[in-house]
Structure formats: structure tokens, C-alpha cells
Length: 82
Image 1 (cartoon, rainbow, N blue to C red):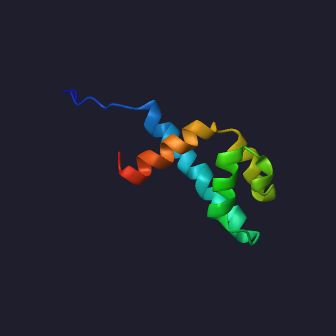
Image 2: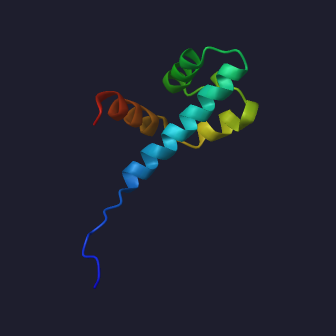
Image 3: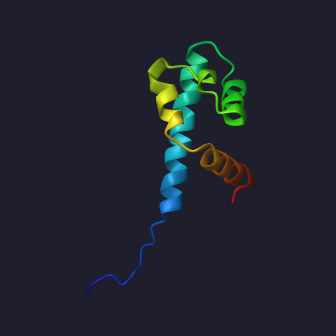
């Protein structure tokens, strides 16, 4: 007897989870280095200037791999619970 339950996978959910993971890691690296993580991340998003993000722990490399529009979209969806 086979299970007829269909499992739906969403590429968008995976992408959002990866962005959340990256932002969490970047936040932690900034905090550990003594920066205000929120101000630094917002500065990066608004300017796309990577120097807002520390190189510590590979944080700059990680965040630069993600498109800023995708970061903003994930943040808004998370904030609104959408």
C-alpha cells in the first residue's frame, strides 16, 4: 500500500530560509566584532557598499552572494508573516 500524500516543495521557501540563515550569521559576526548589526545591515542594503559588513567569519562574502532585492523581499515577507 503506497502513501498518496503529495508533498509540495517550494524553491522560494528554500531561498528564504537560506537568506535568513545568511542574515543571522552576518548579524552574529557584526555583533561579535562590536558593531551595531541592524545599522550595518541596513547601510549595506541601502547602499550596496560591502564595507558595511565585516569580513569576520566570511560575513561579507556570504551577504554579497545574495541579491539585495531578495534580502528585502525576505525581510518584508517575514515581517508581515506572509
